[in-house]
Image (cartoon, rainbow, N blue to C red; front, side, top):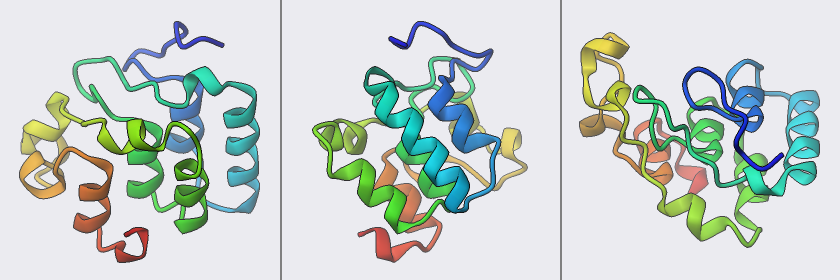
Length: 124
C-alpha cells in the first residue's frame, strides 16, 4: 500500500485500525503488524476537509493507545515527521462539530498538544 487508498475522510487503513478499535494488546499487535507491512502509510495524514492533517500519532494519543504504542512510533525514522504534522481540519477548528469538546484552542495542532490537553503527561 502506498497511501492512495483512502476512506471518505481521507483516512488510510492505519488510521482505521486506531479509530474503530479499542486500545488493548490484541489491537496494538494488529496495528503494528499493519505498521510493519505498510511503511509508506506511517506518515500519511487524513486528507479530507473534516480531519485534514491528523496522523496515526495524533490518533494513538487521543484514543488512549498508551505510552508503548506512542514510543514504538517514535523510535522510527518517521518520528520527526509524525511529531511535526498538524491536525487542522474543520473538526479541530469548529467546536460545534465536536460538541465543543475539541478545537485548536484546546487540543492544538501537533500530537504533543493532543497529549498535553488530554492529560497524558507520560507521553512527554
